[in-house]
Amino acid sequence: MKILALDSSGLIASVAVVEDENLLAEYTVNYKKTHSQTLMGMLDEIVRMTELELGTLDAIAVAGGPGSFTGLRIGSATAKGLGLAIGKPIIKIPTVDALAYNLCGAKGLVCPMMDARRNQVYTGIFRFEGNCLITVKEQMAADVMEVIEILNAQKEQVTFLGDGIPVYRNKIEENMTAPCYFAPPHLNKQRAGAVASLAEIYFREGKTESAAEHVPEYLRLSQAERERREKEQLKND
Image (cartoon, rainbow, N blue to C red):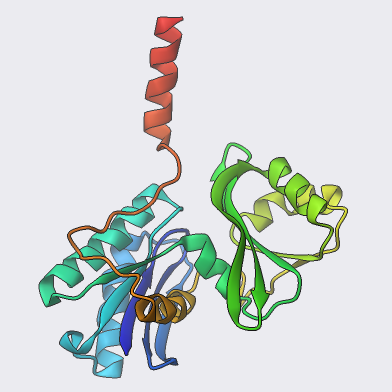
């Protein structure tokens, strides 16, 4: 089984290839450039360095949301284009599930947090049974304090990760009553290697879709759509 994975759901762009539970290559960049500038170049470099023939892939995996609206569109468009070109299925991996999978085997609860602005995060709550990812609370967009209250009620240690942590770490530390920890830098952001690893499991379980069917999962309206609704509501009031 050989899977190409893409993740451009947040600030980081990441591309990886996994074959039979062996990570062949991973290219991750988190530095001041847009995904439209970096993702295809990174993909080309991975293909060149691993001498990858795209036709030998079994599937293309992509972080399917939630996350940055623009980033998700770029990742999904790239995956769809490749899938249509080479006739391979898409494996859509929930972004926060892949983030949590960075900490495979961690004790207690794992809580990824992606900054969704307006004091909200894209998040979910997970635990591991051995190497198996167990969903305690499915991915959602929620207020940070609401998430903290849910976690405190669990009365278990929690490990946090994601690009929302630098934004909300003080609030977490001030309000968490359960023991909390924060993932180190090499594990605390999106990685296509984690997307690829979960995709192998999904593929074996038959959780694929055609390139034509694939759409990202945003979880909430874009800022422009929210502002338009707010204006319409004001007019109606």
